[in-house]
Amino acid sequence: MMKFLMMMMFMIPLCFMKKMFWMVQMMMMMLLFIFMNMSININNFSNLSYMLGCDMISFGLIMLSIWICMLMIMASESLNKKNFYLNFFLFNIIILLIMLYLTFTMMNMFMFYLFFEGSLIPTLMLIIGWGYQPERIQAGMYLLFYTLFASLPLLMGIFFIFNQLNFMSMYFLKFFNMNLYLLYFSMIMAFLVKMPMYFVHLWLPKAHVEAPVSGSMILAGIMLKLGGYGLLRIMIFFQNLSLKLNFIWVVISLLGGFYISLKCFCQVDMKSLIAYSSVAHMSLVICGIMVMNYWGYLGSYLMMIGHGLCSSGMFCLANITYERLHSRSLFLNKGLMNFMPSMSLWWFLMLSSNMAAPPSMNLLGEISLINSMVSWSWLTMIMLIMISFFSAGYSLYLYSYTQHGKFNMSIFSFYTGVSREYLMLLLHWLPLNMLVLKIDYMMIWF
Image (tube, rainbow, N blue to C red; front, side):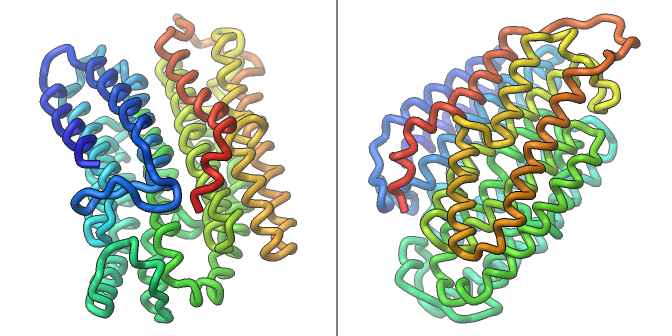
């Protein structure tokens, strides 16, 4: 695992050379293909070196991280044109990628915590440095304080475990079981805020609305998955308590997901709508992890990968229209089918994947999650029906409002999509729908 880390570190000098924007992107693509060819043991940690190791969960999420970081560079062509602190921007992305890579491969719990929180800093830099409105400072503060307030108890919990059991390796968690209520709440709260769970989600729409396209992509694509990854790893340590108390989080997430789905219909800002839809999807992921059965774990893993690609693609689409019309309002972004007929297809493909239409990974994830939750309690069926129905509702609402209707007469000059944008959207959509063919590989990890 160290060799990939070294490759990423040696990409840092490339950032500070002139005209290296696309070179960095191509190096990331190369890194992805080398990483893809690495053989891993599906059932257990493999490729152990120092404190790093990789299993099936890490493998998928690292691939997603590299993929999204590569697409972030593709999406930020406007920065390349303006040459707006470009070197620091690339440096920021590579540091972020290194942090994420280390978070997903780290076996030591304290080091995991360090990189889990460290990945916040480059994201904050992206929002505050390249955001659009002055309110980005406030959004950055929300992001920082929400996540830091919840994560200090996690650090205390890790130290407590080390004090009691004299180990910090994640691998040994499965052999122990702790029945301490305070430890349970302090350990999982940080991950629930990161997901985000309803009631602690307010930082997410703010951060998304103020972030540049690259910030939104990494936030929706990877940052929300850190919470899910942490829960998947830590839940096995609190088996008895989880079976007793997890219904709290399931109820909050189901009701919250339903309420947020309704809230999506009230949005007039495209980015805000996509951000709220992320909260609704993540509430299902929380439920899947909390019911603690095979289908739940599998469904939440599939949903995390699928949502990471889909949500990131939707933010790209919102940015493509924002770069042309300089507005994210649904009242001004009307009738885009008249201007960009080809882009209309991509809007449809992304939004259909978002509402879990076949053959997207979101569908498989949602089916697995519904399976797990109904086997846990059939009463959840009512809320699940509502959430699934309304997710289709707000996806179609966004599509019909942006693509149909009378177009904005105040547009003076306009250019249609360029091949870079179509390629970027294809690279979001292809893995999202083609990974369904390799679902057997993902179903045997747990």
